[in-house]
Image 1 (cartoon, one colour):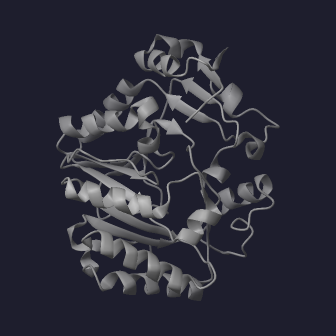
Image 2 (cartoon, one colour):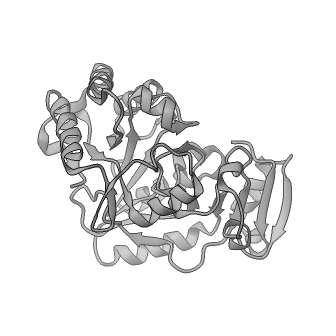
Length: 324
């Protein structure tokens, strides 16, 4: 990803990763700042206009770095479920992404004090095995050639057998390693959803091929048909997607599969609607239930059950996890 402007916290300059990032972006204008929030959280910025001219912000993360898994996220049956935020914002631009309601900026923050994340995880491991989703607030695999963050989490997994790491992606990158406690989770959507709502992501056919190759190389692979988006004739679209996936790889060899309809915090949805007034996804008339915006109960249930039925032809129900 190309950045023309890079903001750097003064204290971040002492970290090797900051130096590496700047060396990889020799043509960028570098601007020193006191704290990343002075840029990322500043008032009266326009996240929509920033999307095509994103800046990179290099920073040090203080305070909380590893968080308990959110209610709208799946734990896949794991105890001690956490997610980590070693980057903020994603190189992709999916219209339905909750980050649009979570962050006021489209700029990308890279935290360089990874050893502090290591210490945080090792502290939690004292209480037993830990499952951490490292790519919820970004796509570490898509950004790895620049940041090395995905490599960091893979190395953490190698060092700690009781740590299970999920790296979720919409990129189509060759996965050549097969670390037993790293799960590569590929989000798959019908081509119509990709073309309409998943701006800048890899084509779904390329993601399927990448998942198939990772599986062939012995990696643990999870497929995420999540979120299911309501489009016209979604039945045909999702049948075509799952048939294409099943033709490319053996679904029985997957670690598991995630299925879930679109849902988002009602608070994030309100912020999305203010920031993106033309968003078709944001302005759908969702039902609010316990603070979560969802499709109407009948629609929600029908869509999920339909996709579960399609998958059931290829993989046992015990390997399919649903959000609700």
